Image (cartoon, rainbow, N blue to C red; front, side, top):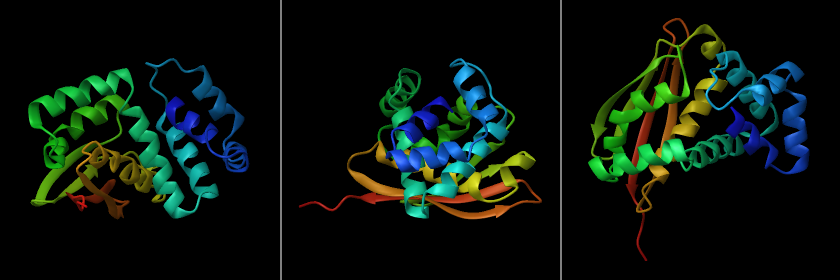
Length: 187
């Protein structure tokens, strides 16, 4: 959450100020006071993501969360995981989907689990299931997770792609995504 708030603060002043205005002072204090190892209530994540959604148009919302998670993947904790994964599995995004449950557990507690199914050589169906009610009240939190997850494809400089949010099944507490990737055009 500190990383996402730092990404908010890095936005142009009007947008950053507007997002801050949509977040309660208590939530901002909770984020500021948290140590790097504290587990924050999921409602904190939901509130910040709704604030970003209230200010940024959809393409900017997606780019914000993809970029913010991309920065997180460069931090010491995640960098070690990224480097180990590349050493073991290479740069194939499909391989990365197998590690999503482990990575998710580093970010969220009691907040669902990932399941990945390869669809083709260049896509995978991702399902985030067993989500708590706060995450499925609307589709904002689920959309932001899909946008964030697109940063995984960015780890391979020879490919482009992303993650498309497909659906939110509120009664089942499940969000469905499709990850896709393809070689970048040469020349």
